[in-house]
Each structure stands twice: as C-alpha cells, then as structure tokens.
Length: 234
Image 1: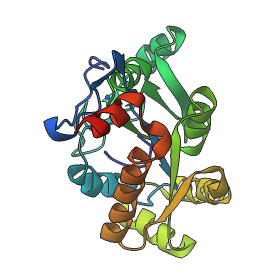
Image 2: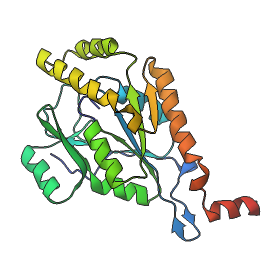
Image 3: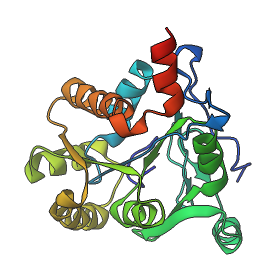
Image 4: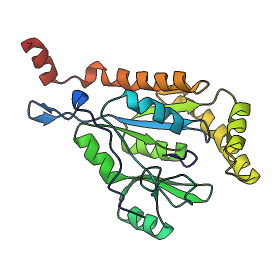
C-alpha cells in the first residue's frame, strides 16, 4: 500500500485474503499450476487509490491484496494488519536484512515495504495479487518482476488533488507541500505504466480498474495447453 492511503508489529505473514471458489486460478494444468498475475497500483498522494480498491475488489474474484508494512504512526481508525502492518523501525530493518521485503522505500521520513513471502506464495498458488505502492517501490517491483501489470491512478487536475489532500486534515502544511511536489514527479512518470485510470468519478474509475484486471486475465498468452484441451473436450 502507498504511504498516503489509509488502508502493520504483528505477524507480517497473515495478510487478509479474498477468495472465491467460482474463479480460482490455482487449478492444475496438466500437472503444472498456473501462476497468478501481479498487479501494481500507483498514484499520487490523495488520488484515491484506496477508495478505488475498496469499490473494485468486491466485483472481482480471487484477488489477494497485499498489506504493506510501515514505520509511520498509526492514524485514528486504522487497523493493524488490515490497513498496514505497523512496525518499529528496528523490526522493519530486521525484515529488510533478511530479504523479507519485495520492495521498500522511504516516504516523508517513514519507511514502507511489501512483505515478500505472502506475495510469492499467492502467485505460486495461481492467485492474482494486488499491490498498492508509491513510484519508487513500483519501479523496484517492475525491475524484480518484469511481468507485473502496472496501473497508474491519476487525479483530474493538481488543484483537485490539493483540495483532496487538504480535506483529509491529517497533514501539516509542510507535508502537504511535500506530497504535492512528489505528485508532480509521479504524474510525469505516467508513461512508464501499462494503464492509466483518471479518478474524476470514483465509481467510473473503479469500473475502469476492474476492466483492466478482467482484460489481463483474458489475454491469449495466459491460456495453457490444458485450457485448450478442456475446451476441445467439452
């Protein structure tokens, strides 16, 4: 998860899961298990990534949402292990030293990272995985896992993004200005991504995001020999 979306010192291996028997991708394909798809969602602070995810995931089946770890202070209403795994800096550095993080980055003085074990396990079981990351982390994941599908969530304008940031009422003026400066850098990187979703209207943006995941699942290169044989045998 990205540092600015509210959506971490307990077991980092117990992320919440979303599962449905009607669309399980972990089926055996001729003795070989089909690997899941890794989706990475990135966007500027306050753009609404968390809101899009909350609307989109109930419309999808069998998507594992990876809960990130962070050293930042837990905000009112946040639940440890659901919004983030809230860790001390010492515990975070222990995970980092043990290669227990798929990616990590520092953002406005706090550390963020993605626990590697649960992501690898879900993908190997054939489950699709969704990560919410800031730009630096997304680039690291893409470098490490080039097959990842990258989705950028963009604001309709910088003025609207600033309005949303101020409306949260959680940051100082200094932090707001840092987030806006970072947002300009992130928006300039949009063309590094496979897809761009503009969050002007939440439900339209969520529908676009759902359509991207469904389209990626339907790509012909993901069809196995066993899939073809099942169709022919039906």
